[in-house]
Length: 131
Image (cartoon, rainbow, N blue to C red; front, side):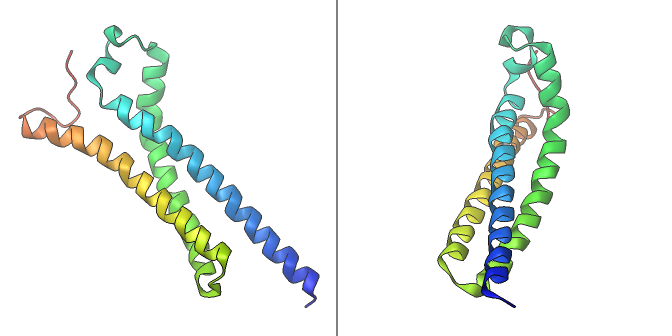
């Protein structure tokens, strides 16, 4: 195998990782405010000032985006694990990015779980919102 084909294969892997990181980052950036909005009682009322179409969009798209992000993050993690044995600078950078993404993903979970736990502890249903 020639040096150029090894370099091209390495470059292709790097492009896939950068693309995967960009997609994961974009979905996480969308999920964080969606999680926060979903748990705000005023968001679901007309008094909150949010258009109905946006409330419906957030309500309908949050969990599909959440599941998609989980699947993409698992796939991205698998690709990153392949780089670990190489112990190069790129592999270390990928691990740092991967840890950041998982922390942001768990932050999304904390945002919506905290409100639901508060509701349950107050004797209300998990997804209760004041009218």
